[in-house]
Length: 157
Image (cartoon, one colour):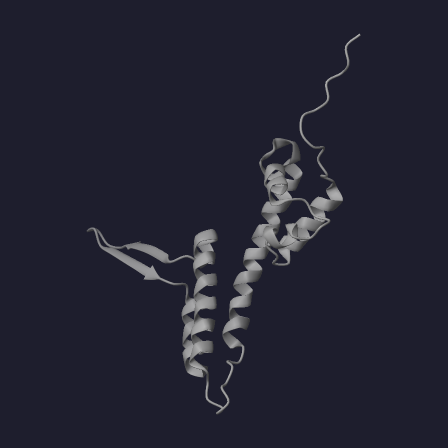
């Protein structure tokens, strides 16, 4: 009599409840690396395997939705970040290092959003054709929401 073969590797700890917890934390803005640092959470490798594995399509869809929510939340946070008061030094003057750090934080988030959500946050390129001849107008630049954010920052910064 032959024994049935055991599956290779460790058994998965995947459950729908665990997947929902992970995706909720992602939607709340946590990175997968931060989530996986908790002792009761799986490794980053396990999570990415679940995403890549066709067996967990429900998890992949929930993960993608959570990432979209996370990115939208990141975009919303740009205004809060820009409007937050800048630290002042001991003499009461605005600390230029704090201003540079804030600028870096905003620019980094803008860059990430422009790459991951280009339709909403990317550089705009518009084409306009009018008349019988070939008349072409190309418009490039950042969305108006970012332009007004920059003006607001400069006005109060």
